[in-house]
Length: 216
Image (cartoon, rainbow, N blue to C red; front, side, top):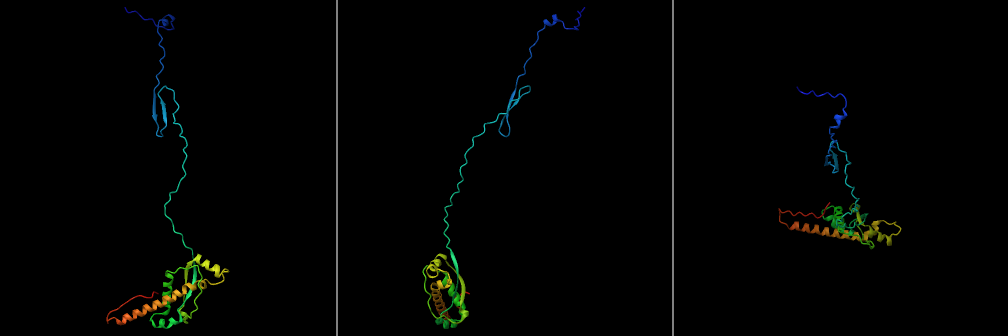
């Protein structure tokens, strides 16, 4: 017969004294470290472990920003000459009238072309030149009126000696320099027209010589 094991219904001090009580085992901590996308080191605790504070790198020291320096292009811009506009009125001399009528071209066009040639390279000088008192042609239709730009400093120097109160016309202050140049160009154009007419007469029949001497 098998021995019947008695059923324990209440604590038995004698039975419990003979048993070994196992000490509780503390769970082992597991630490996993990873880096977040922002580059900050974070420590993640395993199950049953203590959460640890995220580790952040020390803040970098502030760096001094240097002053912005605009590089030099090395291009030197020329100084702009200040100008002043002056109304001018010129016509041909009385001694040139007969040649202008006989040249075959409108005399007003010849005067205009002469004025354009004279002012093309002319520069006003700071010295006053008295106007020349020559007899001019009578037809008023030959008189050309236009505006020219002159050096403002040169004109101011002339006004300082000849017109300090600024009551005279500016044309009266510069005509002594410009008017003789126009008359000289009229003589030159008339000579060119005469030469062209002589060459056309000497050319054989059927040949045509074209040369533009006067610009409208």
